[in-house]
Structures are given as structure tokens and as C-alpha cells.
Image (cartoon, rainbow, N blue to C red; front, side, top):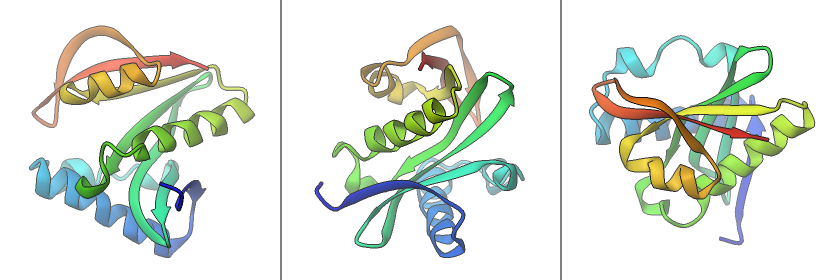
Length: 144
């Protein structure tokens, strides 16, 4: 994917497209309720996007629940672009952002089916599986 670019954004046009990606993936594809998806935390999160030729095809947000820890959330890639390195590039971009800020730990709640992907990116499971939005998840983390 030569044209793939990932970056942090607060651009309204890009955010609108990123939220559309989330709506397609989480609400339409996975059946998560709008109430759960739009949890009111986007305004306090750092937003990241993946784009090709100006079109947003993937997104994730980053929050800081503890001083030395960042939580990656709402990572989504449009179905036609999955398994092409987009998710890995989003994670790489976020991890570089965190390294520059000297944050030593990234955590996330991985959907059960995505655990192998996150493991391939260096994340390890922590604790026991749990349900979030009626989907089985596992907390995972990576030391940076």
C-alpha cells in the first residue's frame, strides 16, 4: 500500500470520515449500539486516521486513563482494506506518538477474533476474557 498515510488529526473533515468508518464497522457490521459507540470520550481522545488518496479507510483513538499508560480504542479499518497492513500501520503510528512522549505502556481491549493480529504486533494478553458491548474481549498490553 504505497499510498497509505497514517497520522494524528483534529481536522473536522477527517474526523467526520473517521466516525463514518467507525459507524460502518462497529454499528452496522458488528451490531454495537450507537449509545455504546458514541460514549462521549472522543473529545478527550487523540484521534488517528489511515488514508489513501485523501479517503479515510481506518481510524483509532488514544486516551490516557493513567499517567504512564495510554489506551488504544475504537480501532477500525474498512472491510475491503483489512489484511493489507492498515491496522499495523495505525498501531505503528500510535506507538511512535507514545514513544515521543515517553509513555512506556500501551493497552487495549482486543476483540477475541483480533487477538492473533495484536499478538503479531507485540501485544500480550493480561487477565481473563470479558464481555464489552456483548463481544468477548481480552485486555492486551505492550511495553514501548
